[in-house]
Amino acid sequence: MTKEEAAQLLNVSVNAPQSEIQSKFQEMFNEYQIRLTNAPTPNLKKIYQNNLQELNTALSVLSGKSAAAVSDLPSSSPTYKQVEHQQAAAPPTPASEVKAATPHTNTPGKEKAKEKKGVPSSTITAIGVALVAIAGIVFLVIKTFEDKAAIAKLQLSADSVTTVLTQLSDYKTKFDNQKFKIKNDGTTDLTVKLLFVTYRNEFNKLERKAYLPNQLIRKGSASDFKLVEGSRVVWDGSVISYTLVIDKPGTEDYINEANIYSLAMSEDKILHLDLDNY
Image (cartoon, rainbow, N blue to C red; front, side):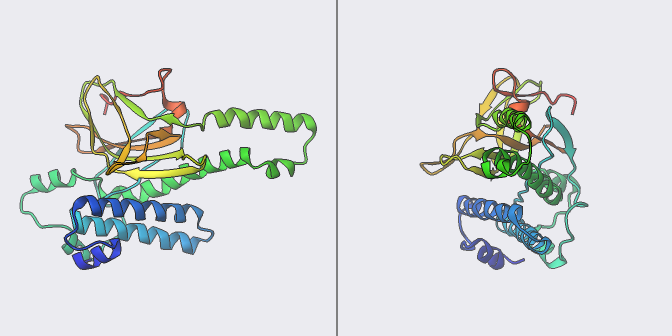
């Protein structure tokens, strides 16, 4: 993919500033993620997956960066796993696009260091699929609670309906907005490379947001997160579920952590991370 083709795909000029390229990428990335989640047929899902891949290729061509969305299914405790930098999980890329998107280098050390600057493209496919699964679970549970018509159709006795409603009410308390905050309890500084959250917006509707904060959290300190574009607050830190891609100095792999925030946070409503064993 040439720079002209990448710029046309993102609807920006070839010499557009990085802030404009990143903003346009995030806007189109979120839109295709929503379409992918709600696609009624396998063919449409495949089309939207291809669209997301093309967006990441365009971003790489224009800025030398790549973005991905990573997640695992929610569990009752945080799940940590290492995300390798290898390209095995990513779809094959035509030689012409590799040549346009990736500059050559003769020094293996520099090539490896450069690969770690952005989220590796090998995580794109696995991250996208897992993230859609988390979003599906969140929507399914909340919509089940809120849809009175669905409950009315249940042919259960009065006692059974009461039991079901009580259980759903307990579930819903776990899907209320919290404020996203991380405390680094380890002995090494951490950098949050990618953040993907699901939350309720001002209209009480579920919304998803992905961005690349590249935010440093020093050992023993805590950090809040929010997304601001100019003078406008795009995301104020509200969160129901989250996905993180974390860079830990001294390791060759990124660390992926995903969960429902209310299940992962401590009593102080802060997400405590100790990644010393990674």
